[in-house]
Amino acid sequence: MSEDPDRHETSGRGFLEAVRHPIRSRVIVILEHEWASAAAIAAELGEPTRTVRYHLRFLRERGFVSVRRAEARRNVHEYSFAGTAFGYVDDELYATLTPAERRLLTNHYLRVISRGVNRFVGSGTTYDRHFPLTARVSLALDERGWGELIEICSSALEQIVAVKREARQRLLGNGEDGIDAEVGLLAFEAPREDGSPS
Image 1 (cartoon, rainbow, N blue to C red):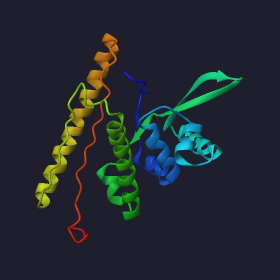
Image 2: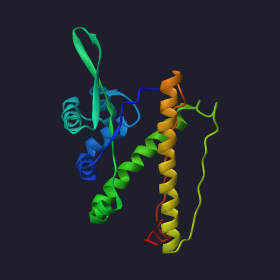
Image 3: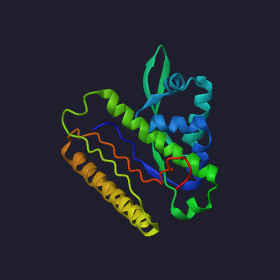
Image 4: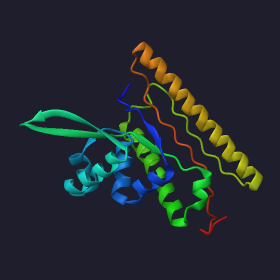
């Protein structure tokens, strides 16, 4: 089982503040999937290491990342970081967000999902043991149907989180490595063919 720091939920407003800055959002996306040093993050983002360290400090002070010290090299300790919190924005808070804030939040989550998918495809070996579940359905819904779809997705998410907790307890008990897996749920209002909202 890969290292998975105990993750906790943060308030939606705090999470929104964290991802509002584009560099912080991109740092969180990276740390959602792996431990990384400030230098490695800076190299991937094409930003100065000093700038990345500033944003890592911001995120660490607010509980979004944890840090561990790696082996010292030439008396210099290299630190690695990982994401330790996930942001949850409930319907009540979402209703108060501006269209720009809603876009920012949704785009952040889409980047997290995309990075996971890209890592999966890029590895080339993850098809060997377990067949991935992939599905896409195009729908035409009325308001009631949209509400029912969201209820189904929300219920599935609750069940997935319960399976995660139970499997983690079993893995801790039996010492097995486990199967690293990722699930992304998307339900969105698709634009019309002319690009306008439906």
